[in-house]
Image 1: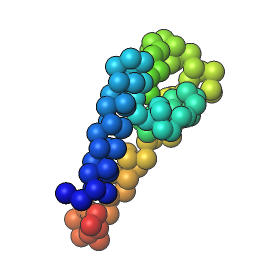
Image 2: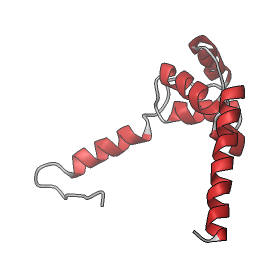
Image 3: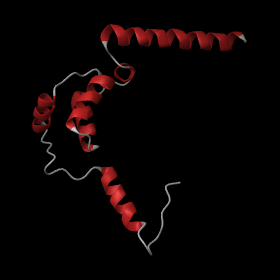
Image 4: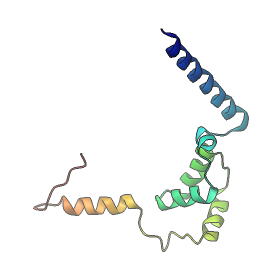
Length: 113
């Protein structure tokens, strides 16, 4: 193994150990460290993707180090003016509906490739 490759391997190992230590000590994920995003942006993102409240709370905790209850999430959503009742369907639901219509009998077939 040449010297530059060894240094790269060593750097990767040390970097991984540092990230693991931060995760253990502070409960922060790599995402929080490298790409800080506001709580509101994260909540709105997961909300518009159509996730259930329990999933949003779990994602915020596990991947972003934000620990809130479902009740707090509901309050934040209300404060942000977001409601499931008047929200348009999630993008994937729209895509599935379009795909099923276009792939019906006698209609054009589409491929995801």
